Length: 238
Image (cartoon, rainbow, N blue to C red; front, side, top):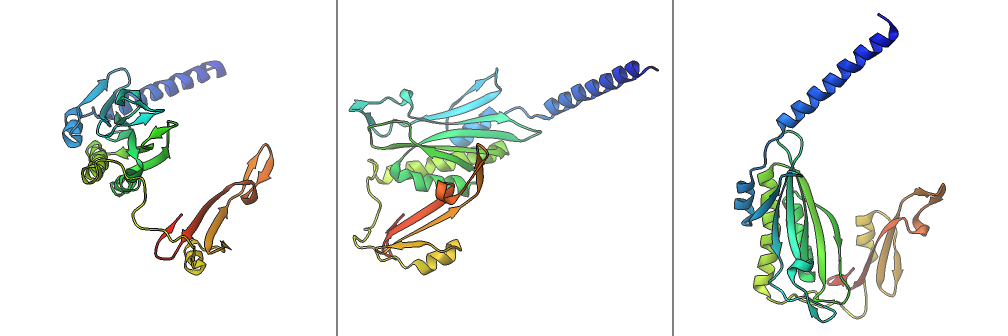
């Protein structure tokens, strides 16, 4: 057999194996149980056949939001969602964006992390919005029911907060001392690095090394993670 014929034979075998592997993988994917997702989240969803994605949505119509003194309808960007798509085998991928107000961010993030979800971003979309609106991206890969339960826990936590206070709170609970008196020693022990002290405040910056345009950059160029503390040891803001 000539070299060309042998190469063609190998290519055909490889191509056939690839097609077979793709077919097996597709066959192993489990169809989304959309009814179960709706049951767990308590939300109605829509299915995109083209992308094989099922999405549940929750408009934030419970709080009036003004942008430049104009009342913004949920359709304009105030709707939380969670989208589910089959992944490998019986696994499902979930990605979502959660509309939050300032006093909901910490509790909602804790609820997501405690439920095993990933929090991949937290940011704002608007200028001159009142009350301030934030968007928390969540995600995860695993059992569809567990992911849906995680989404439900996040939404339930938000509902609990709004049930206790109909209007979003604009301040943190407690009072931060006007004159700072932070003891740096316990914080340095936690972070494992020395920090900076200034008028009773404490700041730590943990640098990393990187390369940009073939130039080495590090802590002083801004490649760092930092945290600053003000107030007292009992009540501080950071």
